[in-house]
Image (cartoon, rainbow, N blue to C red):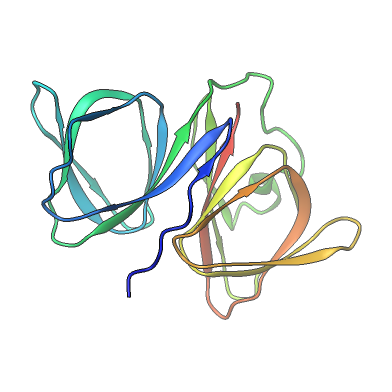
Length: 202
C-alpha cells in the first residue's frame, strides 16, 4: 500500500509539499517563482528542459538535499525506472540580515559530530542531523523557525531547561514545523535517526 503523503505546510515563511514523480512522465510546462530547498527521498535522475532551450540532467541520491533557484518556464521528466518522492520547500521571503545563527548553544557548535552544515545562504541554513541509536545531545538552541524532514523514522525525547520532557514520533518521509527552542535531545530508537533541518532567515 502506498504511503499517504503528509499534508502541506503553508505559512508566511515557507510552503512544503511532498511531490511524487513517476518514471518517464513528462510534466506540463510550468515555472517556479520562488527559490526552493529540494530534499530527495529516493535516488533518481531528472531531465529539465527550459522552454525553447536544451535539456539538462539532474542526478540525485536518496537523502540528498539541493538548492534550486527560481526558474522560468520548463518541463521535467524522471528518466530513471522507479518513482521518486521529493520534499519541496518553497522559501517565500528574502533573507533578513538581522536573523543570524551565532550563539554559543548552536547545535553545530555544541554537537559537531551529529550536526553537519549542508549549505547556507541569505534565506536558509540547512543542517543534516544523524544520531546513533540511543544517542543523547546536550542542551542546544534553535533560534530560527525551521522545518524538519525525516529521512528515517523518529522516536525522540526533548527536555527543556525547566526539566519538561516531551516525545516526538514521525515516519520517514514526513515533515514538521518548529519554532525557536532550547532543549536536550535523545534518540530512543535502536537504530540511527537522520533528518534534514531547514532554518529560515526570513
